[in-house]
Image (tube, rainbow over all chains, first blue to last red; front, side, top):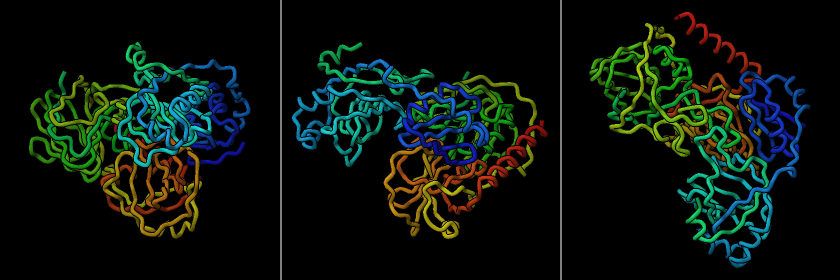
Length: 204
Length: 300
């Protein structure tokens, strides 16, 4: 485990399985910690007061949560509501049905932190990789499912975005009125299954 | 009850408070006061805790009409205010009556409200963040003809010396960034101008000749005060509404004590940086926070 200080109150910790490790640290509920922010490479820990070296000893107690013990969350997606099918087909050299089959056929791991409400999913089949749009959209409909480079993901909130949109989910995934706003837990395993436009419209 | 009507919001005015804590892992930024020092003075003068809700005004002329009697206060940089056309000073407790008109012109100003202000709370804060519809009144900045409601509170007399007035400083102390490449002396010599495109997301600096080799980075955590160098080589000093992660080199980090100072530069001007070590940064912060606590206690 390597660590460096970003500032007086913030330390950056480089550790394997950074997201799972950060969840383990969060579960310890150590006093004096204001933020725990994992990224793929490092985890930032911000303290209420100055960072002290001896905090690093407490980290030996962190238990890395085993992701395989989690349930698989099924997310319905209407692929008829994609916005970038022409582009996706051109970039992947697959037809629409093949793209859907491959997208549905994989199991993904969900993390947060990219942009508010965004469900960042790793495990995208390499055949579906597609670079982001040159010009991001100013407004993407809530629930849009997209592909951006090597990942797929879901814009849980309406907002700007540059990913290739292949469908939309009717499920509410991020409720800002709740202190714990996420529907899909951090580090959950996720699978998509297709629904029709009619099913989407009637979803309650 | 109705407290006030906004007649002109200035360039941007919004309800802010101490901000959001504990949600950065969901990409929810801190938001909150750009200049926590000035805000704490304004709040002190209306009997509120340092992080309580207040109105933050960025640029332009802010005008409002009060609809009930209450106490207010104003703190900010380059700030002038008038009540019913009469000049008033900043850092004073001012009693207003129904019908009184307030006009504030300043670069970054806090209007302390001697009332519990009704606003939408999300993730423990009423700080306004329109991009996610958080806080404020339905997640929006204040607008012309908007009415704000709440309940005036009883406020004891309070006084602060003008010596405590916030100052605009263009020399900001920083820690060397984790991805800084180059000569620190040369970096300190540079004077950057602050683009008018700056906002609560960050100060955008205009650079003619600072250069680092482009670095391919995956996203790493960033915080208010982190100075990023995008491929354009125009640095950005991140502020309270910035994204929580980013893939650009972190070339410097503003010391905690100087975070309120970078907020004050939002209206523009120039900026220079001075590197300090982490121990010195801690000492400066401890001295400053001890001083502020002492001042607010001594004036009680």
